Image 1 (cartoon, rainbow, N blue to C red):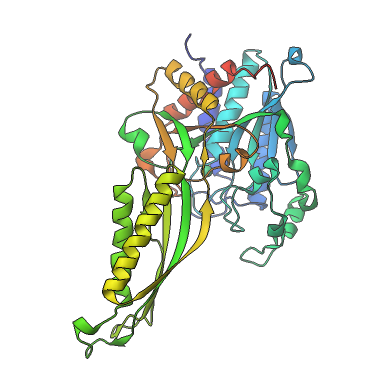
Image 2 (image 1 turned 60 degrees about the horizontal axis):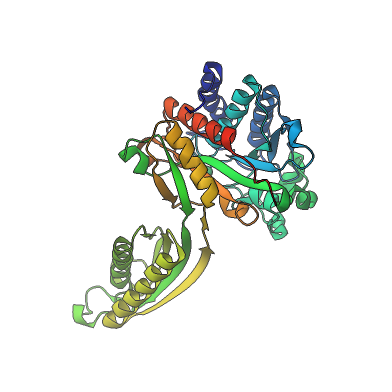
Length: 420
Ligand SMILES: [Zn+2]
């Protein structure tokens, strides 16, 4: 059996729509489309029109998620369950046109292909466009999918954006219903799973000359704030062997993080923020705070790397006579993709004529919230130079079509379990 092709008109529209959607943005370079803004509403309107045209039944839920249903074959009866497929419309500031949008557009293209062929599936296919995954406006993340999974934290409704507008007020102004978010939840017993196509945001597929890959897991991650305390002093009068330089110690600690990550399989560590006090050209730094973002493919590798880092930091601190404190400010448990969905996606990739490359995701995605209630699976799509969250983000037109065909093949073959 060969993979089904997208009809030419569907493939053409899939490519063109990325440009049309990217034009719905705040002014400036790249795409800036944030939660509960006029751009969000405009994008919903456009996406909804495409869903309607494809023959889906559409609705916008209380959290601002757009959902289009390609109803199950009537033969499936009342008991038909739901497979969610989609991604998010929102972006970081000055982001690209593929992160998020691609997963929604590819899913719509699949429904168009099914409609053109007159195919109904033995399950309801709900194409979802999540309202807020990046959390750019409110510093939340995966708000839309949390609402579907029933894991939305109502406390964030009172959070203000940079202009002091609370999420509740922004949602009300946009026509959403902050007080009815509990209604967005899908009954887990009705959910067959969640599948998302997303750009890789890394260089692996490109390096291996592959258009798509199957995701194994989303990284386990933690973020830490470190404070190194030494002694400030005169840059001219304190001899080198008498110093307790907090910045020189911190520099060594940052390199230790790099070394620990390099020694771990698939582990990455990043310091992206550093503050030096007192911060004068002629003063030995007395205190430094910096951050470490640590991610690994699984819990064991994460915790091993973390333990190795703590040991290295203590050794550096005692040798240099400084104090170091490490405070964890965030932890994500990550998630493992469902073996069944993973195998089914791999089969679809092979059917499209490509070697199956499995890879893990260092970035978080909506699957993190949905795996609490349903099996999840993800397909990664090659992007140019591994660049994302950047106006230069790019996916070749041919790869968009390949992603569509792989997803279509997956959907066409996906069979809901007969029991349970
Ligand atoms: Zn994304």
